[in-house]
Every structure is written in structure tokens, then in C-alpha cells.
Image (cartoon, rainbow, N blue to C red; front, side):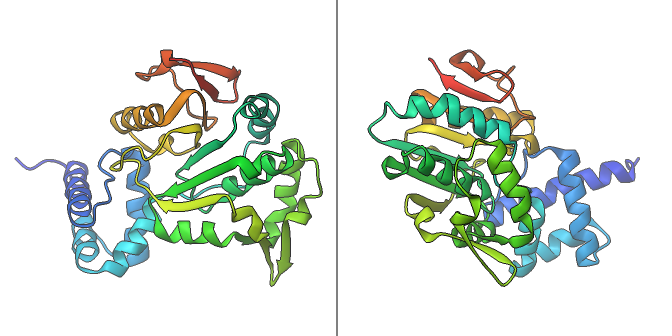
Length: 276
């Protein structure tokens, strides 16, 4: 007896993700299914395709469709100084720790279009630490990484970002960090002097350095438990002893294999220090 349409669609999705992983090397097989389904359905509507199998056929035979599919599947919701209290806690509690280091390596994993990377660059500049930092900003998606490199964001967002910056403890005039032109804010090129942008896939790539700070915020909420544990291990391996890990507000180290290896720096702000 055949199963339900729901079961059939789940099989089609498994085959689609298997094909994408094997043919293109992008592995979404351990992403949270409910969220993934919504994005697959959105792609089907946009492509005017009625079945997941038909989407699989188009994605595997049309690289342009794959690019659109990749953009749809990777969630790129971000903002400058997103969760201002997190950055305020970083400024007041983590910066004093970083002052004791001669050189500081920071990894922004899953940096999306780069708003939080520029936020950190400005924070470190105001703390007088930027000249001895190197920030590695990575994302699996080349298109969003290209936007991050440009450092150009909608001017209409600057009022919101200025409010976030001030609540995060910003000490200067936020507008000094960008030039307004053609409805966009173009951030100062010197802010990129200490940033290396590069493609890296948290699902398939390994650690590439040892860091004093790892930021991976609002990324793992889209993964299932298996992939979350894999990424937590990758981040743990990438942090130096007493290094700092920053997660998103909806994320936690509780019930992960490395929970006992960290101490919370600021309660509720998802800032942790590796202690073992």
C-alpha cells in the first residue's frame, strides 16, 4: 500500500537534498526539517513548480536555479548590533579580557551579509584593539559573502542601526563610519583592513585556525540536533583555551557534548568562555 502524500513529499525532499549534497557539495541534510520545508515550498512557488521532484530536476540541471535555491535555503536575517545588550556585554566583559592578548584572532562563522562583522570591527576600533585583531568572516554562500565584502547597506536601516549602536555602548557618532550615497550607506574601507572574507561550510568544512573569539550567532537554530552537535564540536576545536564563544539569544550550550567545557561570562547574553 502506498503511503500518504506527506510521506511521499518527505521522500522527495530527502532525494533533493541528497542530490544537492552529492552534485554541488552543499549539505542541507541535517537542517531542521520544518524550516527547510517552508523554504523549499517558497522556492517551488517562485519557480512555478508543482512538485519537489520537479524542483530536484531543475536544480540539478540548471546551475542558475541552484543559485536561487541556495539563496532561498540559507537564511540571511541579520542586522548591525543585533541584540544590543549582547554587544554591550561584549564591550564591558570581553574587551577587558582581550586587552591582555598581544594579538587577537576572531572568527565570525555564518556571517551572512556582514552587518555583525562591521559591528564588531567598529566596537574593537573604539576599544583601541582593532590594529591587533584579525577577523575571519565566513559563510557558505558566495553571493551573501560578496555583499559582506562590499560593506554597503540600505540607508533606510541606519536609523535603526544607530539606535542599536548607542544601546550597545557606542561612544562616537555612528554616521562617521559610513558615507551616504544613492540611498545606501557605504562603510569606510579601513573597517575592512583587518577582515578576511572567505567561504566556509559549517556542515562539511573543518577547523582552519585557532581563535580567541568565535561568533556563531543565530545559525544553529536552523540545524537539527546532529548538525548542531557537529558544529559545537567544530567551534570548540577552533577556540583557544579561555577563548570566548558568542551564540544567538535562542541558542544555548545546554545539553550539548561540550556544555561542561565552558563557563558563562554574562548570564542570559550567550557569551561563554572555554575553561577546559
